Length: 281
Image (cartoon, one colour):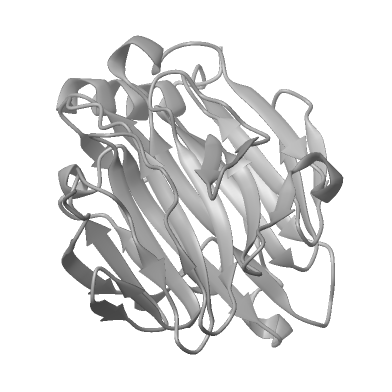
């Protein structure tokens, strides 16, 4: 059987967003078709409050979903629909902006470590202007499993299947069928999780190093893999990895800041809606 091979690796760039929050943009903003259906992945992590305390004051989104996964820290979500949620260590927020959400994400701590990820997941044209949705998943709502070889898996979305074990995640989405797993491989462990044929597959190593079909992926590197074949992972030193997979949408992607649509006209309409005060009407 053929193996899924690393076809490209990417190293994120330091940037800031919101009201000056320091973060690493692992990918996003250019050539999104390469990562379809995923648009962006940010990693944030600091024990310096000056780098995160200003947070993300109210801002709009349209046309996609945001997934926030907190490793450490506390972040409060509020939006124009009246939703309020507190993300704590191990929690996940899944927000479907669709036709429009205005929300804020503000730290609820003045010291200590704030650490986690935000992933942007595209929506197909048929779903971009549907009603928005929001849900928080507390740590106890997210399945966590440990395999016989010591590998630990946080099953956020999709279904994890390996070593004769199958576990559905907290989130199931119909259009892009995303799989989002947080993998912890101890030194010397290997793993061959099942990934649907044709799914776009990304691996982000945020601790340690990973070997994928004979190629080493180091800390803070993103690997983009081929779309078919068996996935084989191993680690000599131990690794923590975000596994991100989904079915490509295959539609035009036009992005302008927090708006992701299929055409420039739709982007201009979003800007007019914000200007005219009807963005969330």
